Length: 551
Image (cartoon, rainbow, N blue to C red; front, side, top):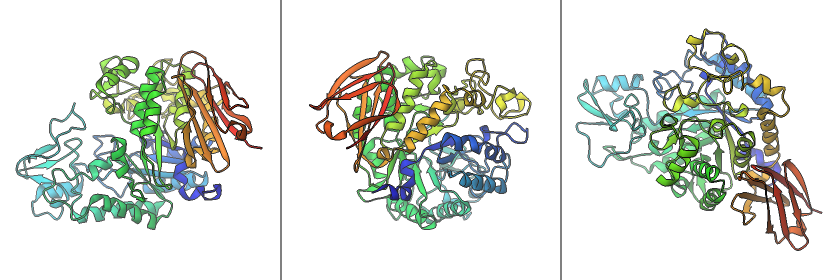
């Protein structure tokens, strides 16, 4: 593939930015972010260099799970605006060269959705079989709980119906019956509707649960991976360059199944939870080993498919793939207090507080994420180093309002503070007084300006998205060094996870053919000797990105 074809699979070299409309910008002073406010802030995202905005759920909702309990798949939550406001936002984003994808949450609905209310009120309802009902809890059904602090069963008794219904998440989120062809057809309609309105794809929520058949009375008449393949075909017929980005938190070889066989054809991308957990362990140990191990375990993908890498997502930082000893090691370093942890498997904190505000180490994290083979994903507020608010319950601790300026409510809203949809981060250090967009825009050394440069440099490096990666085998455990080759283009991306400056040597058999090495960004020094010896010097928590200019 040459550079002229990279736009055909734009997602491989995209920079994604995940945000919650409700907490981004309030335009009318009611304390709730909205699409009009988001449109007003679009130039912040354009300046940052974002190429695709990922919207968390914005649909009408019972609002018991931050919008993931949907009551209408074909509308906009009236608190956030109208379909017209959404259309204006999509057009404005398109003008700035930014695509938009949205959460597709079709594993379950709210129990207030008209489908479920009809199904629950009458066993003869046409929607009865859109959900999974049982007279008794069946043996062999799903037993693992997504939210063990809130639920003790995947089955909930419905008094009016006189039966249990299946829910893999909260009891107020009954699972849709994916074995029902009418449900599958409805999902196609939902997808087609939003593509027609201008979305460029979807982040598919909880894909393994969506395709789960445990607990179903009647197995589907087709392999559900075949249905996922059909969904992708449908999406790309309706919009040829639309993307399906999957949430698949499973071991690598199981994740591979959701891309399809060696020919691909199912999801275009998956969020890489395995690498994210390896990153947590590597940071704690100041040792590149977990990252190296994870990269070696990463399966090959079809050339059109890719990985999505992130430092921090919108949920807890899940550490479920680590051993108990490894998880406790991360807890001790990044979340020693019980209130900082969640479900015994994850952390409720953002990167800056976990790293105690160490600016060099924070930048190292994002340099590593942007250097991994795949597309980087940012969560709103990461560009300025926002902290969590542990006073907000559960996973939502990292979803406090965006901090725009050192003004009342951080410039998020003109509403009285007690009317905000969610409380801001408090205190001079991490609240809007100490961390905000406006101040960092005018500070050349700020995290915001540094991250803008990182995004720009990464976008100029299609080698990372489309090239072949390999390790540069330095013997020092704290050095994480990757090389990408794509045609006649080569880049070297080196990182020091250690708290001390380091110098080390390695060998490259083709060192002489690389020619002159020019610094793309970062600090440090790398020298190539005629015999292939590579000598690198990196500062503490330092990074150095280089491009080879061959003769």
